[in-house]
Image 1 (cartoon, rainbow, N blue to C red):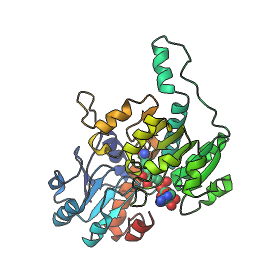
Image 2 (cartoon, protein in one colour):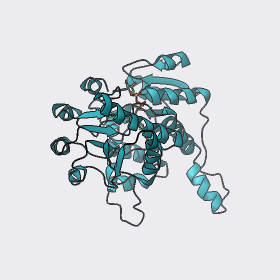
Image 3 (cartoon, rainbow, N blue to C red):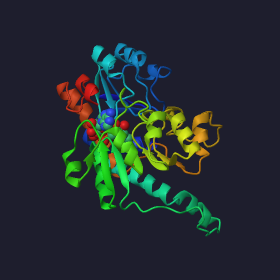
Length: 336
Ligand code: NAI
């Protein structure tokens, strides 16, 4: 099938071209993100392959459908950047990669916890500068601390499994109980209790209308003083201004982010020679107790290999049968 691959980085080309030896699709790579400004570049492609920061809103989808596209293949799990209802109305099929090594994101989340707690970025810089003083680097033991996991799907369960090994007390909130988590001893509690009792709150739910700005001023106010907040899910689950206020007041003791609400203008590109125009993001960077990575939770060799293989498999299944088990249906949209 002729496939336009948007937001293609060097590593996307490398992994997709390698995996495509088994599938033989005609892959055409575009550096650009797909959005209203660029939507013409994929004219005539029956399949369009996109990533997390491509914006497939109603206007873009209408253009795609009019230009002959029939399949949108997401090379990620989340589908909040595609208007699924409009796609369905237009007869466009949307497929995704529902699971590809949840351990990659889970391990990165725990990496953020450890790096923040033991001040590893500061320690790294100090030692390189010949400063071996420990003042300001005091951490705490994870053993016995309470971690609140919001969303215990594949990634949240993998986080629970790792932190269980650290000896943490694990509490969670999710509309569905995960039996793997229950067996680990994870206690499901209402959100209010999770906020009130957690030393660390970590987000692993999808971005839906229900989870948009889930962590706002009210939620922050209910949390423990000095709480550590981790978000590797989607940026807009957090109201960034509310979190900035929490950091300023000391309510939030530390913040680890792999995602950011306005990341579309920043992440996955080298802007090191430019003036960053996003004042909220720049404010976040001024805090010594904030650690931000640029949406790299998924970025392991194992995950990339799995993502590319499932993506090409999804495209082949659609080409062969017109359907795919990894289709994002309207029912999935309701349940998240
Ligand atoms: P999943 O679908 O296996 O699990 C999501 C869980 O969140 C489900 O158990 C669901 O019931 C729960 N949930 C839904 N609404 C909720 C709510 N209002 N409150 C509490 N829980 C709620 O998804 P998976 O694979 O665990 O991924 C989670 C999220 O992680 C994705 O939606 C995506 O946004 C993000 N992600 C981030 C990556 C990164 O590189 N940083 C890579 C992959 C995913």
